[in-house]
Length: 296
Image (cartoon, rainbow, N blue to C red; front, side):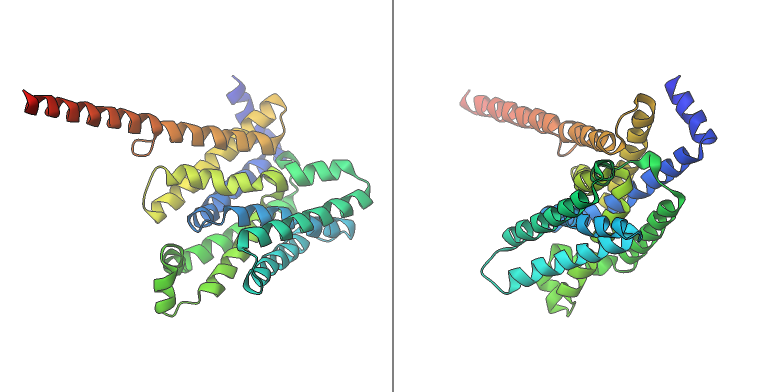
């Protein structure tokens, strides 16, 4: 009955239609970019970029500018700063990431404090997909087109630099340039997800669907499709529970994604913990049986 009410509400209310479309788009782009993030071991970088956009968002909001521009700018400055510190000092990448993103996040909190608006802080941090304006929906759609087209056009380059950077360098591929292109796409995806899940939880949408897909396949292109699918299911289901039970949209979407990961972790046919345990017991029993036969 509640599902029917939700369906009727989607047909009736424009704000819910915008929320549904935006949620689906965010689920797709976060799922796609997340695959490259986890395969490259850059999960912490995703966390860093998601927090580093906060000062750009706050300053843009303060001056009445579209938050997309300020967020992308500060996200890219942070990514470049992390690379510069790592390349020009003894400090390793994980340390430079921790320094840069905490500094940027702290600056953002100070700016928001000066704005004296805690309600805006809540929506920036945790998202509110039910309040997405039409302009933000179209901006998210534009970001999705840019991200998906870039991944499609440079899929082979992303594939080889992800799995074998040494070979890609031998082929003459610009590894650093491709890395920073991926950082731009990551930053844009993060900004596009602000209204849906917020700064604090966007890293979960980047990592969790991709990690779920990683447990289900060994092929990158299949992983991308599965990750996008998990992102869509998480977003739509989370929006349903958020609207029906008056819950915060961002956390609800992330909880659904986490539940899907947990189910995959235990029940995945190849990598699932339960099936691996059953196979291990069968193998152990078979070995014991064959050993007892030899002794007899």
